[in-house]
Image 1: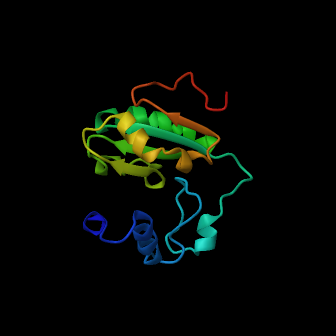
Image 2: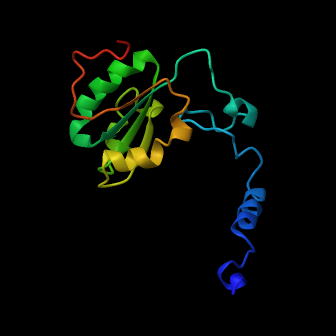
Length: 149
């Protein structure tokens, strides 16, 4: 009966068999949301610059708030923030005309909440390298806000 429900032996055995088939260097001890060149060596991809602060700004966004989001991002970029946009309306193409957009991380899932995105993509193992993490509302102004204060 056990083999009927567990045809690969044990769950642990299945996991180790699956991991053996992955390309070398794909499994890392830690991860983050920093963009790295695709064609760099695995050793350079795993190095994190510990000499400077790492900061993360995550914003659930819809295209209707594009100009407000632009003002928010422009406020955070000079302070060495990695930008991640969670597109809840499915519209990514409407953002490419902004200068910083190609340097941001874009994640798309229609009709989801900021907490849905945060729970799935801001896992503690991934965001642990960041000194400051902001999960910002797209309609919250930044006129009187300064990230370094």
